[in-house]
Amino acid sequence: MKRQATPYLSFNGNAREALEYYQEVFQGEVLGIQTFGEAEYPTPPEADERIMHAQFKKEDLVFMVSDGFGDHTFEIGNNISLVLELESDEEIQGYYDRLSEKGTVLMELQDTFWGAKFAKVKDPFGVTWDLNYEKA
Image (cartoon, rainbow, N blue to C red; front, side, top):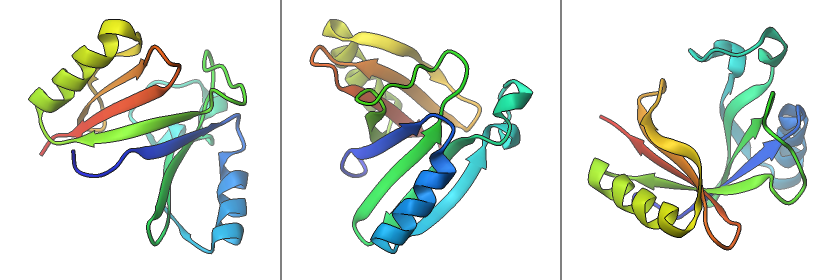
């Protein structure tokens, strides 16, 4: 693994407002906001301005944020996952296989439009893991 697990916070259309709040509270910076409208991913027009992905950083404090839309059910308590940035096909496959054995696959392991291999799995204890391998 490249680093520790990174928290990923999901919001119900107010991720931009949350980022502004966190900037004020933690005095950090927002890195690379990408909206659903900017992504090469089919989304309805009403999702165009929602944040697909952004990162917040203040020294060692790092987390990512996103807005959901459509069938993404937002509920306080299920709006956080942990991202593991992995370094190889073998590593991501191994984590995916072990987590999905007793867990629930929320998104199958697959190649993505952002150039990564990605999967989302909820473990048997209710923790959601986002597995990501950025291909060179």
